[in-house]
Image (cartoon, rainbow, N blue to C red; front, side, top):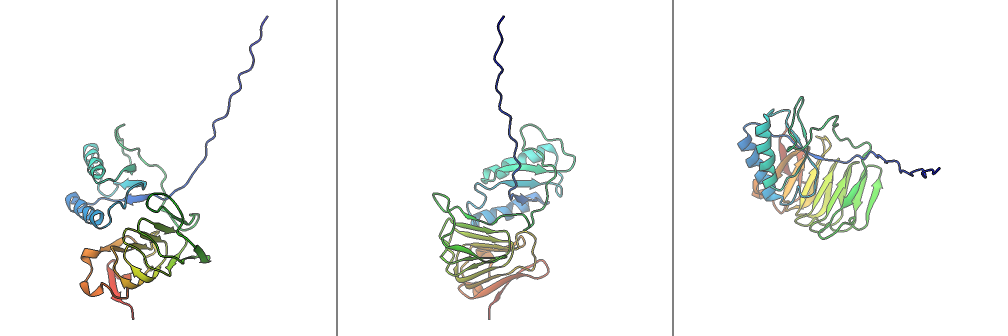
Amino acid sequence: MTFAAPVETKSIRFRARSFVAFTLTPEAPLSEWLESLDRWIGNSPGYFAGRPVVLDLNTLKPDVGEIEALVAELGQRGIRIYAIELDGAALGADLPPALIGAKEATADGLLMQADRKAGGQGRAEEAKRQAPDTLMVKTPIRSGQSVFHAHGDVIVLGSVASGSEIVAAGSIHVYGTLRGRASAGVLGNASARIFCRKNEAELLSVDGWYCTAEEMEPSSRGKAIQAFLDNDTLRIAPLS
């Protein structure tokens, strides 16, 4: 009589992981929304490259054919949709999956990240936490670098190069020239502000409301300014 040796099996390990995804919420008329998106991309090329993007369609409520066309339109713009939010939707296998149980990001539980420069990944040099809610960056932010701080303000002692970006849950303070993109209050803080000693920014944004370089008043260029929200309008005013 022979006996088979027991087969050793390894258990499958499932692990949960949280990450921040950008959400696009198209509105009607869709053609105008796409034109606005094209202006954003034109002023911030590569902004969506490598980023997880969720398409929230609960406002637009398109049918499946319209969703397929929209996903294709976004793909042509280099925006890859990770998942779709649409209550009660039955999406086909050719579309990104429906997202279930998504929650708005808050500063609680998110970790500060400062990474990704052109050609590789790395933290902005000498970035240090000044206080529990403040990130101080002591060196200039070079083109291609991105600083993301989900716990509060970002202070940059040097300049911010064109093609770089700062994303903060709180306010952004740049003591040099701001030539890149600055997005403050990204987790829903409408009271956040952007301050810089010399404004040459490609884009300024507070709580999702933004202004590109082309849309800024010429009088604000090259000057010390602050950007803030006033009744859902982004204001750019002299800093005196």
